[in-house]
Length: 494
Image 1 (cartoon, helix red, strand yellow):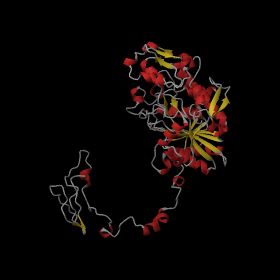
Image 2 (cartoon, helix red, strand yellow):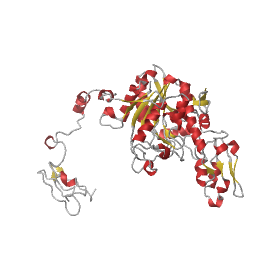
Image 3 (cartoon, one colour):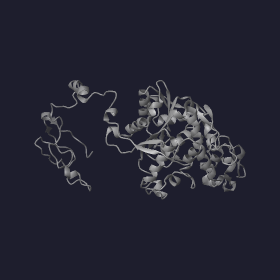
């Protein structure tokens, strides 16, 4: 049987078609709740967003999911993991940095209704090693300890592009996001003799033009946590490449200067390794205990781990849920291909904005030549899932389910007695009308796209007979009374 991917589009016109409601509806349609038994600890794996990124999933999605898991008897926590350094100024590379960044982005226990934790510990070495003999390139994976310890894992993923992974979907959320820092070094080919940066990148030290011509030259030494770069007194750059572990902290400095030439094979190998590492995460928790939700909204071209968020390359695509991470990512890639690109976005700039064109190869990848299918195809080869799937369109669940749960009573029962004590409408004023307003105005005069067609001063006094007279030339309202109340004086135009 083909794996099913349950889908609802992104249009909303009622409470039960909000994206939050649709997320819960496809969760139930995919029967992900059946994995949860009373008392089970449930890890909700999210990307909490980088410092100053903005396309990451709003915390309300994780909150709504956590509330539903509690209704099912589970004990949820929301989590992310530490990163490699990735740049000289990383903001999630330690637990302390991660929690500060997550809190700034709204991921707190108060917001989520459950704990938010760093799943791999302070430095990223709290992990669980998993053998994956069926892996295409990796034969082991290092899974964040808290995720491996959970009874159930729900990958709540913001589907988007990714500079290295090309797509950032369910596979990436586990294949990078559920790995400890040790696991991330492995996935990024750290120390690999051919595909690692140290082993394979082309190093052109003569491209360095000297300290006098590079105001940021000191960053070339300070970008590496192991101190493997040195700028000598005679303006040469030296690199102890044999000790390189591919933390990627240097690429954003070396590549633009021509000191490094990007190594496409390293990117391709990492994309394949993501699929193997995702398999390791699934094996650590249990194949029947992992579910996937992809929120294909705000489909930014780069990952939420960038410190910025470009405009989406396609409009909102919808909400997907499945028990198969390969099928759900393929369904999202297919939806993006069918969709027209967003005008003015990177998909238009790269010439792939047409419906039917592959979007992420050029609008997602950091270098040309990568494929949005590499990770997906590798996950087919290692047995993690199937590209071939059935897309099931899910009907809305009905408004009853999504009414305000803290007080589900209808309006009169909630407010009848309350409004007797604290009347918000002053019915005793203006013959029951409550407020000081003109009985009739020419509304068409202020609807014209070129501007208003009347020039009555907004503060001209109302005389109670439906008339309004121009204000005095000094810009102050004339003194008078409005139904016994003194007219207020205003200075100039507000």
